[in-house]
Image (spheres, rainbow, N blue to C red):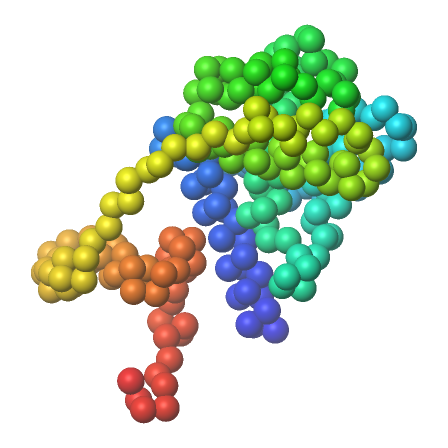
Length: 235
């Protein structure tokens, strides 16, 4: 039906916007090329099944690949829904970072769970901060998500090494300044005449919709006239 098609189209558009936004966060606000975006899309939407590794002393990457593919079918216990595309994207990004780290460091080519120790943490952090030049908070998010993999490997009985739970295996973070406009500034922006600049006029309107509704950019940028309806009072 038309509503179902529209929902599917909106989900695909949201996925593309999430890919672009995440890439920009990791690359100093640079916009990905069409080729890069296609590669990101392929990695985020790949559907092939990865069989569950059976060996006791299994490799970390093998489990991560299996976990990512299983996550596409996993249901969030709180919402009763499958995990969002955005969550799967994050899992794939961390998996790719670990793969890249291993590919550039021969000491970890055959990384198993017993190898997740102080040396691994130091070298992985060095890779993220110096080679990848990621922000402190992006590095922290990477470590937190890596711990998600480790926790699940432990729950699945694939890992008995709990070094990742130690305090020195920490997800770093730093405080950031939140820049915002107050209500009077928003009203001033609303009254400003952009009629001579249609593009800015539309951008202003979408920005205000985001401010007053709390919707993410990937959501409010997809609002169309047919999405706006009147309530029972005609407002």
